[in-house]
Length: 492
Image (tube, rainbow, N blue to C red; front, top):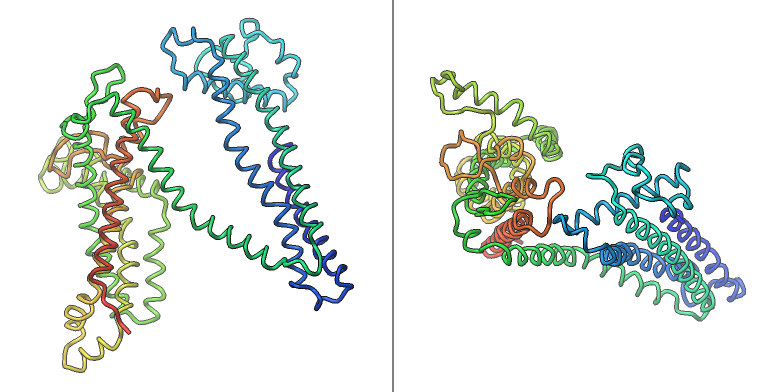
């Protein structure tokens, strides 16, 4: 049974359990609701949750673990002679999964039968061409060992899904029968339901923490594997980034880190003054009608996808800078410094525009949190409006503004699409903002693009770069929170 219909059946059983559980509770009290320990709906919720939650939990765990178990068993059965041409296990399993998917699609479209799949021979059947017709692309011809492993993968997947359906349905039936049997006028349904809801809320609250821990450990293990294949001294202390999948790679983070910091600095030089001045105007000088009109327009920038900013950098800002600073011939300023549309300045300017609403919104909220009584006291002592803003409001809001700037810096450091399309792909040390450079995020994308061998240092370096970037942004976030908490003013 497809997962969608299985989940739909579970919800239907849960809805039926709610109705039957509520009806049984009222019936046990002889129709007098006041004799029930809990409200009638609690009895229905108890049966519904007992039917739905264990089955959904089993379905989720099974869906996560089954592919891992099947892939491990199938990869262990693949003949070792497939490695004679240095084919990686990941690429072999990728072909096995694609062939298995193609066989399932062919059966679903009635273009192959299960019997034909069972007896087919990879040497006799042009399976690769038939799968290509179904939209399944393979990098090479289907070898007999791959086809055998794909058939095993498909059979085990079907058996696993059938067993999963049986187990999930049985759990739902058992949960329904147990909770329905316990339903009685004296049963403390409200206590049970509230404990269940409390457990769900605690689980939801812990998901963010568990996700963060999972991300860190997944990157940490791959980073350890990388440093087992490549020298940590070259990564942290080297000065050259030159990946070579044939060996002898120089994989230093320092040129990438410099490009990341340089572009982020230019972005902050654009975003912080404009965003802060916009926040001061909207909170201190603008009328309510102007604020209600201008603030949403400003925050629209935050909703624009970063790929659109990247296209804006590539097609508009970059060519504009080339016309100003020259390319081949002298530009408008008589300069010939810029030779292409991609540069640090291009990416920095566009990223700064993207960060303006981020800085503006946070600063505006922080400035508005300063009590009006402080402004009134300053004005009452004879200070002008501008003096009140400069000497009272901004100093009071400064810790929060600094925190907002550091959070914007974290956002800039983690940006990908703008720097991919606007900054170029050259890893080097340079102070010229009109030259192309690259960043850590760009190299992560590049190293993990295409069919790659996850056992090579040239691929595993992406995880080391990701972990370094995570530590950097986490440090900035912690610093921002520390500044806000340490210097924040408490107002009544």
